[in-house]
Image (cartoon, rainbow, N blue to C red):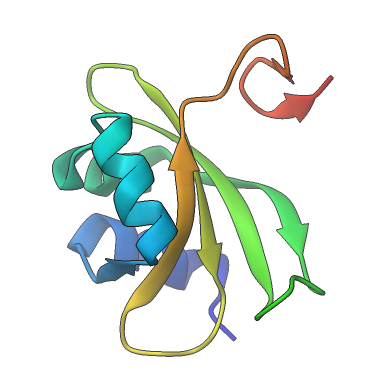
Length: 102
């Protein structure tokens, strides 16, 4: 299973792929590959889902260089490319300081 450091390195280095859902969400929300890579520099795991439907996963919070907050849910399977399950900007009506659910 991937460690937090593995996730961070994979994001920073661009070693990731999108689920079909994440690909559509990134396009809809205008989230670029460069922004995803930038989030790796500041990312922190804010939620863990050990019993997620298909594989253990976690939700990370990271910021782009332009200070755009992004939540990225990733699979923790130990495979060459990190799988991005979904991604979005946190809605402040649902999140406190981008990292705690209301």
